[in-house]
Amino acid sequence: MTISTSNRRWFLWGSVLLILLFWKIASAVIGRAIILPSPDATVKYAFLLLGEREVWTALLWTLKRTMTSFAINLLAAGILGMASGFSRGFKLFLSPLVTVLKAVPTMGVILLSLIWFSSETAAVFVSSLIVFPILYQAVVGGVETIDPLSVEMNRVFRIPWLRRFFHFYLPSLKPSLLTGIVSALGLSIKVMISAEVLSQPDRGIGTMFQIERARLNTEGVFAWSLLVILMTAGLDKLLSLLERRYALENKRTD
Amino acid sequence: MKISGLTKHFGQGPLYDNFDLTLPAGKISCILGPSGCGKTSLLNMIAGLLPHEGGEILFERIPAGSEPRFSYVFQEPRLLPWLTVTGNLVYAMDGELSRHERKARAKEMLALVGLKEEGKKFPRELSGGMARRVGVARALLSDFDILLMDEPLASLDQELKEKLISLFKERLAGKTVVFVTHDYYTARALSDHIFVLSPPPVRAEEIGLSGLQKILEEINRP
Image 1: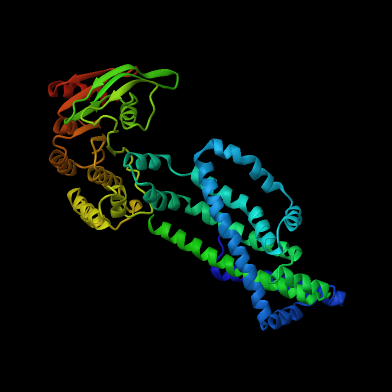
Image 2: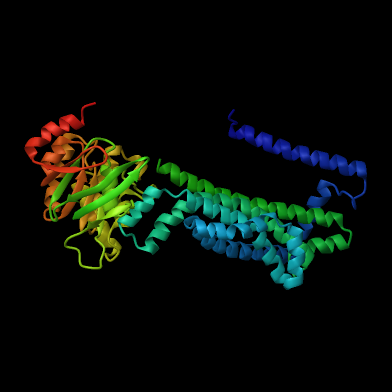
């Protein structure tokens, strides 16, 4: 069954309103803001937060850390994923490490990284480690689905490697890489904030969460959560626009 | 080009078993044979795309220690879907030429294969015949010592076949070309030498034009 655009909006907004309604009722029943603040109080507090310079600094620092770790990850996953995609031996060689990274509990990595690194580095390290397998698998999957007949064509025509990389391999990897990036970026932000909560860097959303928790300001914790949701949704939207643009490009060539 | 003692197995039996064939340099050689006799495999082994288990393929007129440069009209055009027709041609051309020069040559070649107006189209906007002609254009634009062509004119109408055969004759004079076809007209019009492959284990026999008609009738019999 297909759903029209206007109906989709009704479903989406209906769902949001229902969540808010349950939240409002639950907070009214409990009656204590320290346990469960109401949605309107949370939104009001979030607006208050947005008026403070320190809040923007925290948001930007977390975003900067996330992007740094994501860029490192993308580079590492790109290089190692391509090597694994082309060499079964290398893929096998990396498989124990990738299995460990996929299975290791996030909290365990955070605690260990706190012992090993400074609070600033720890958060970037944790996020990189947790997100790496997703991007790595996306690159390996992409390489493994590259058309072998086109690879032969490249060989026969002796295409220079730089031209081959930018005009053949990268476009071939684009669909699976975009899907990997979309699923990894949201996780990256979540893991980054969890790491910041424990590592307590000077500036960051996680540090702000911890401060609000220490003050027993549940409204603050909820408001920060709301800001993180909005930030992640914004990034998701940006990526889905990129994905849609890519799909449109492909459709144009159909 | 001298192929000697070539051995290649496919499935349970040998496809090529101690196979010998000499293809004259600087000439256009046509390979004919029934479906499944390994014509495409032979082209792929010559190009180094398919490893063989025994024997050797020696290339004349190639300086010692260097590999021959191949160009190939594949049976399926193998165009990159994210590049335009011109983009596909420019992509496969010699890296030493400037991009501007490569584009100019691509444009000229597209006009020669009857695709002057299709340069900005993407491969999926082309018919099978058009895509095949782009494959031909790409192969002719590449610098090569040996040109391999797998059914280069299949699914083209007679007028286009004639146009491309003239183009081949003009551009490929003195070049070493090996091509596979099922088409009597193409074989007769284009080849200097015609070789017929037998069913596996494959053997090759050179035939003259007089024997061509009879053999093609046998090959194409359902």
